Each structure stands twice: as C-alpha cells, then as structure tokens.
Image (cartoon, rainbow, N blue to C red):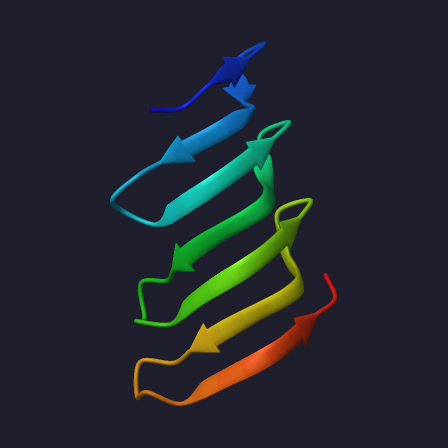
Length: 71
C-alpha cells in the first residue's frame, strides 16, 4: 500500500506490476526491485528515480551483473 504526500508517492509502496520499494517525492529512492517489461530485473539502490549505488542486474537470458551504478 502506498503513501501519498501532496498527491505524489512518499514512503514505501508495493505493486505487483513493476516496482517494489521505497519512494521519496514521487520517485524511486532507497532500496527496491524494478522488473522491466523485457524481463530485465534490477535489485538494489535507487536515488532520484535512477539506479544508483550497489545493486544486481539480471537480464532475461540469465546474464547477471553485480556492482555499482551511478545515476
């Protein structure tokens, strides 16, 4: 269940479609898991809506990258 502050996500939210994780000021921020339509999945840190910090990316074919992202 999401939290809204002035009409935008703020706090934590869970959806079964795309993203499970934390929001701040309407963008992904903190820890989360994003599943893309093409089967790619990213689990890790987000900042200002972008993958940022430590995380793991898994492609639809099973290839995996564990490391750090910057924006």
